[in-house]
Length: 223
Ligand code: NI
Ligand code: MN
Image 1 (tube, helix red, strand yellow):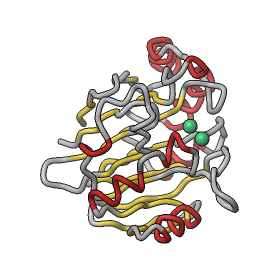
Image 2: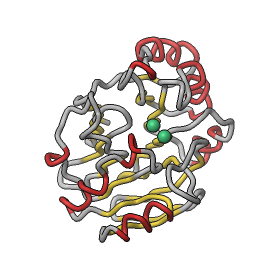
Image 3: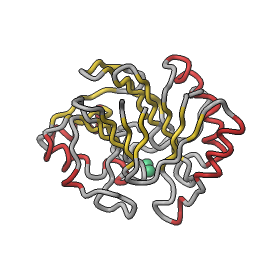
Image 4: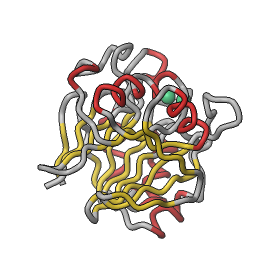
């Protein structure tokens, strides 16, 4: 059974027994809600949605510690390579096969955090289960296509408002995506992005066909 562990803010670790470990947007050392220390994290691939410090975070240090491969936009991948790290560059709309399945980069309406770049989201096929990690983004109606093209087991959505979708827009995103399960993130790290995940859960389950699972930092959801 695959397991996704919430590392606080936008950090997630996707694992399965004996299989590759995928780390998403690891913002650990400056994250007041991080349940682990950077040195403790083990990963084979590190997926980075954009260059803002709360997403690129500790990715390079963890990649160095683990000889992990950074998967990101071309701009971030090139920067990682210039730091002497392994990286795989993709760009919006492109899918690539990996030993665990595949990664497709999706649109995300947000700043790149790096000159000339774009922010992205990911659709990851992990041993047959499709997971959408939205990154930091506004609501956009093409999210309908994401769920149509890749029927989703899991959609990870930001709900903290101010920098990303707030609760009500994220509920509409969930209705577009039609994922089996939705997990919220990017809230309550700081007062500026305070949001009630139980309100989100209630609205998702009232207004969409998805189930919402609220995962506390350090806890996991298995599927
Ligand atoms: Ni950002
Ligand atoms: Mn962010």
